[in-house]
Length: 572
Ligand code: DGJ
Image 1 (cartoon, protein in one colour):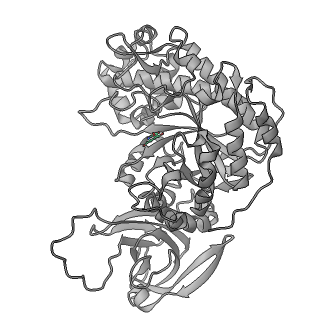
Image 2: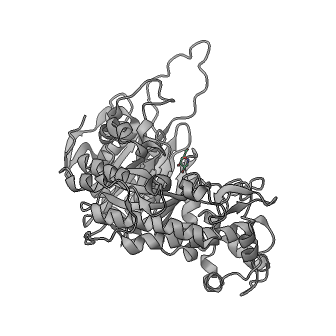
């Protein structure tokens, strides 16, 4: 178990917490210098923490975990042992503001204090008006006052448990609470434990393609805001193909109602809802940033368009790619739109999302699966300069099914990947946005993938053990899904690459520039990075590199290391 770097106890937080319910509107005194912020490096966007770029190797707690510090007590050391540097954790509106205008920051303070103790950073998830499309986390004083805080209505005029975006009262109450939270974080978080905020969670209308309350119907029959139409008219080449097609098919209008401008398909309802969610969430974020301008993002319940599953089967109006342009205009205070990705075909989904949001928004994965995450993380960081990566339910990883029995946290595949990436973080950050990195996910028995990087083409495949196959038992075992591995590559110089990954990966090289036609391996060293400095271990040759034919990460008969540096040469 790694040594936990203990940090000074934040006595002042404890003192602040004693005032259990304090006025939400307390004035501020904190420092605002060097707060976490975003900056560009080449084509990448980096999160700057304490003045340095930060690679977020994160995990998200289950939704209810943050409500009990007792529950979290044994979890923190597991998270440290898994080599996380950041924890995503919910701040629920119902807990923060149980009485209108009276905020209880104790659970926020405890988390900041624990993060300080365990040397972790935090991203708080604001479960305000919506969580997974529904308003389950709103305080009782909001839930029980439907007159003042109106809800989405379905086709039969019946309210559902989702606050309507078409209500200034809803928006302003949420924005006031969020602003109070940000003001408080600014006041108490002197050491910048909190590095980013998620505003709401997977927003959108579920069960129908749009809100049909009176205010929503009125807005739907009113003209599309000029600001949105100006953007569309001036940015035709940047429009998502579906948006451009709908707008052009309806006559490329510069004014008109939503259906006059975009047509009568359910997609128009989704555009309308996207505008209203973006405007609302953007205003909540702006109110928070006015107090303390941390980077802010929204997360998306991702659903690829399918003819049989329209908006409303997934949250209609959430920041899906097909309404990405609407979110960009409607919510300028949101820095990053990001995909929650649980589907097995991770690269396909990442590319689908990135087609709409890159390069403006960096890739940040706020939720994903903790098992497949062990290899997907190499793809996200290597191929897409991801700013951060976050498996969900991190507090249960290795404890709950499908794990047959509790697993030591450091032995989890994700922990091993994060251990490797912790060493590599300075090198990765140095190379982000410069076109020098690539990432892959490779699948057993699938053809090799070709990657052009620097002066060579890398052919990457899942590495099979080359020993003779074992006899097939009778009866044959149940079929298992094909094994996956993940790897990233960094071009370190004209003839040199760094390779790192999870699972067995085999790489061969061929020249990609004029000159002698064959690439040979000069040397391969496995090793580690200590404080950003390369410390070589074994020189790998012979059986370990197929008698000079390939680089092999992980697995196999000789357990090659997960970080290697290879030098190449050419001959004819
Ligand atoms: C997505 C949500 O955003 C999370 O809060 C959580 O509910 C997960 N789904 C559960 O899989």
